[in-house]
Image 1 (cartoon, helix red, strand yellow):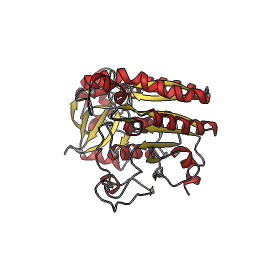
Image 2 (cartoon, rainbow, N blue to C red):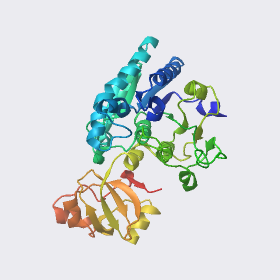
Image 3 (spheres, helix red, strand yellow):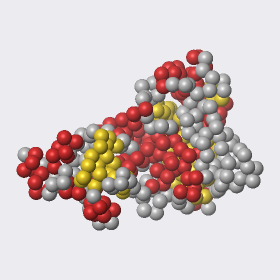
Image 4 (cartoon, rainbow, N blue to C red):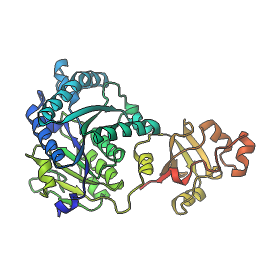
Length: 373
């Protein structure tokens, strides 16, 4: 069954967590060698691989005398600055003897939230793959702040899956997959081999991370899997410390947990709006506008807008909420805050009369709007 699910996969995004390739002393070089050899075997079989690898902070924190996780962002940035080159060197030294090349790509959320930079990043990655070079991606921790960070590399790997149009996401962690209960406290916990759809029940099964090395627990992995599956991509969460885990997966072994892709996936642009573009404010709409959006498949017009919150410019993403504050959608807005304050509640025929110009009848066009699942 598993082999047939993966038989179509040409391009795969592989995320390796800190808990797999590092320990309390820094990088676990034998594990990096094992993962590198496994990836190179996939490349030899004709697969294209994009690697999202954590480990820079773990590799550099020892030089700063840090035990456990860095306690603030400047310390994390300093550790990443020291460790990122070590991480890349470790991969390079293990790919090179196998006649394979790697390239470093460091990203922040802004790089993917801006449509032009998103496309530039995509073009770079596609070119590297075309030339047989394996991109190794990490969050740019040396410059990142809370406002522009992805949160964790699980999230980043799901966004990269959309970015490079991969057909599979593999998240390698220090656990075997998704269990129905916490295996650390319940010896009777059962591994779930397949998940048809990620429901609220599945999300509640995910526990928090107990690791001092990484930022993501099972909760972030389930969220990443959900984002990838909504794009129409199957996802596997497996134990990266299992010998030859990648080649065994592609040989058809039932390792880890496989999450089936959504039957009705989002288009790439709507996936980008929903998960990559960070919202800058909120728009509150009346019941008529809510129904038009949710059940009528309509665009948002100024007449249904009753209030705004936050600041935003034309082209930013905003959250759409009902009058009780419940989020109903997210979309890319055609008017800046100052303009919207002048036209909200008015008919579309009045936009040009009020502003002296108009970008369109719609405040948010249906094609640039994603309903909340």
